[in-house]
Image 1: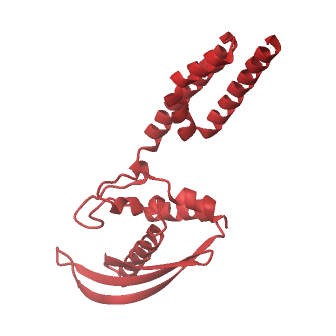
Image 2: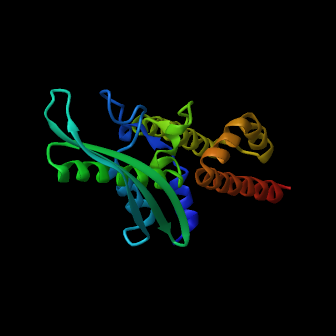
Length: 224
């Protein structure tokens, strides 16, 4: 497994479209991601054959009682200890689930599924933001609107491309290297921003600029 590539994916922010808000009196009390999404992300980041998990279910209680309308009801509570393994890295955490149903089997099924999902999500959470770790930060600084960020980036790229085109188109107008050097000093900040945020584009532009500088220097030497 290429951990450099995996680490890059794990450090990416959590898309807010994958965050579910709590609803009702029961269940999660804070924002969360769903179990299917956590598994889907694990498959995407680690690969379908790059991770595995095992569980240990513990029955906390199983009692026959009544619901609020005095109808027979089974109540089950289970704890799950989940262990996730990813290419030699092992993480373990615990989850809890409860189930309520007329049939004992349905109550057990509900409790165990909830416990396993809770434990698995908590295990995967330790790997990074895409698994919901970002939700534990009160500032939610790593929870973003991916579509808005993509649109913002597209706008920045368009502005950068326009700047590069403007600079390249202007290079033939310079007739000596000194004037070109002075012009470059005037856009020093923009070039620094380009180097920091778009290094490949910066390198390409500087190669073109250097070629024009070399050409002007050669012309000056020939004239001398």
